[in-house]
Image (cartoon, rainbow, N blue to C red; front, side, top):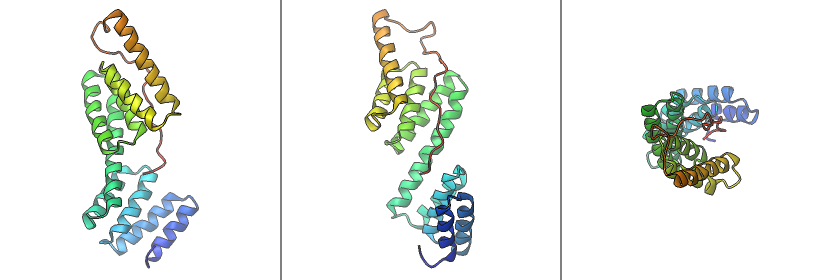
Length: 196
């Protein structure tokens, strides 16, 4: 933990499950030693757990700038960036417009590239692809989510619905009147993450 007394106090707060107090102690450690990458990294993790993503990203970027050779710091920054993209895509999907759905797909493809193990990103991508009429791609994304988490009921339901829609489409040979999948209200809902 180092010799900074604020770090010890921050971890004591974490053990008590008081992320706000822990963040305050990490902030003091950063103020005392602003060029300590480890302090910025730990502060960023704590901020992310408290859903303060913008500030968490700021300190993750600072940690990487101070110690670019740290794989842990770089991975943390990548995961936070993917999480930011999920939030942006989620906002776009609520607009229920074709252009917004396409923009959401682009953000979600980038998020899954950055964090290919994110089941949440894959499920959101599957839903966005479904909404843009790319059901085959949507089924693949949902299938990838199932490979990562075979017991995930949401992934299973989405995958089965997409496969059934593809079977029906093959049998009838068409799409809706607009050539686009309509929104059924079953959009993937983002869950609050436990942290990075």
